[in-house]
Image (cartoon, rainbow, N blue to C red; front, side, top):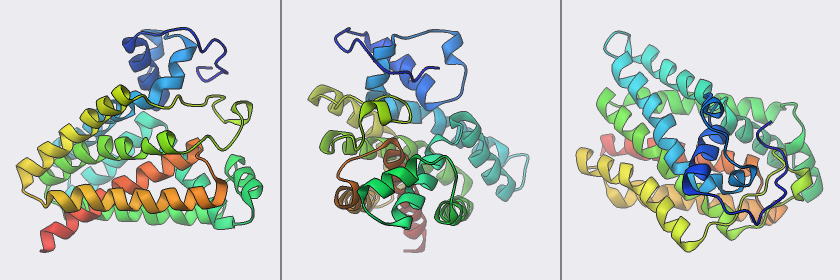
Length: 266
């Protein structure tokens, strides 16, 4: 009910309206009971997407860190993943499954978009989610608890910041009335882009400073992954969708975990 079509885009909104909209949009926590932002604010939620990652990443990291004090490490890892799924309603995982079904099924642009819009999950989506969860859980389990928690805190907002570039450089692939959310995000301004950079990079700086991992690898390799996914999306459907954003976000985040894991072996 929060994602209906935006009609009066000329209405100016306050920054706190847009922040509340982002928290409502990207989580399933009942923030809407506290505050109801204007509908136009939902066009700007991407500008606070990394900040929402501070909340989801923080909850996941806290579950891993404190859960490991009373539970076996493997159980704490699974609990941490489950907590984020509950908070987000598996929003991005749903996007990843649809993305894999659409691009895995192949065909022309219209067929890919039609498959991604279909609510049913296919073979590519199921297998992709299984592989993704195995890699995510194994990567977190392989890290010391404190490093795993710090990496979660950094990777969640950083991946959202990197993925938000899709909205800046690609058009929306569908018409607004065809969107699942009935919403087309506003392209971030330069000021909004700089603000998103601060949101996404601050936790990453903390991770690099406290762990001493190679900064150029943990910053550059996820960006390279995002770039190749961008080229795939551009070539296949010539624009982004919400499913593309969710998929790229999770794959970039997973890349951060894998890079940090690799640093422990060097």
